[in-house]
Length: 298
Ligand SMILES: [Zn+2]
Ligand SMILES: [Zn+2]
Image 1 (cartoon, rainbow, N blue to C red):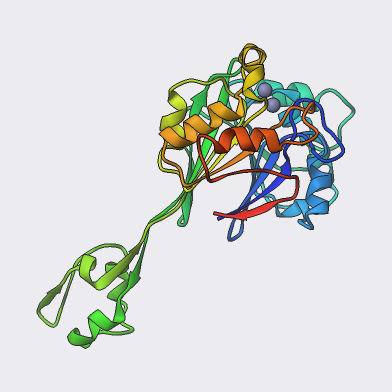
Image 2: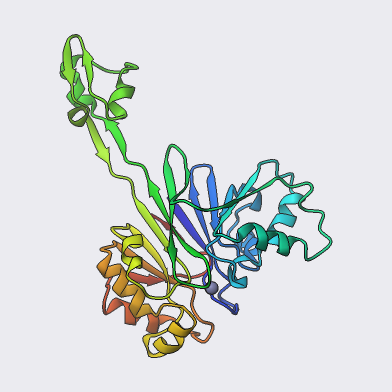
């Protein structure tokens, strides 16, 4: 799993920080989490063709997370994009999307295939490699956090299978699926004949207030990407606007026992985000701050 930060700012962009968007990549899947204004330009800077996007997951319909959608769709319409673009989001997504696309004389939608999915269950999407689940957070009427969870994989332990005289046999597929097999009258246990590669977990929490449900979302994540709009000295203001401080992000990371924390969604007031990183590190050491166009392997 790989992610690229396309925008790490919040409500107002700066020269260094675009509005919110994170690209998730796994094999042929390229999923945008949010699509703030200018996201398609950020994709160009990251040397990623917008036509590679397979899905968009929306956390919520605040402008800093969605205003890049019409521009991106317009580009796809003129780029021979033949796939169906799936856009997932919280309750209200269909209404907000149609209002936005009806705001101008658009030739986009009659040509481009777009499927809108209002999420009403925990499992959002699944393929053979990973699945995406969602949990609600507390910010505006409807706002979602997303977890990307890689499926566990079993690698065949060929040296163990030697004593059974077994190699390159279609029956090995059952073992890799975790099923015990019988070969030449002998039972072979999948547990012994395979090595388990535990799948990794990535949690993305953008705008939210601080509440206990966050620990559950980020629980045991290998990588926890979390909004950190303010320093704790602005906690009152942060809370009023339903955002987190870097201290609260770090407390969440610690309680959820994540491996690594990346802070993002910074207020434009911080020209230098090192104080936010320092504040978080006091509580959770393995913390870094995101930069636009930064890429991380999970
Ligand atoms: Zn935001
Ligand atoms: Zn918001």
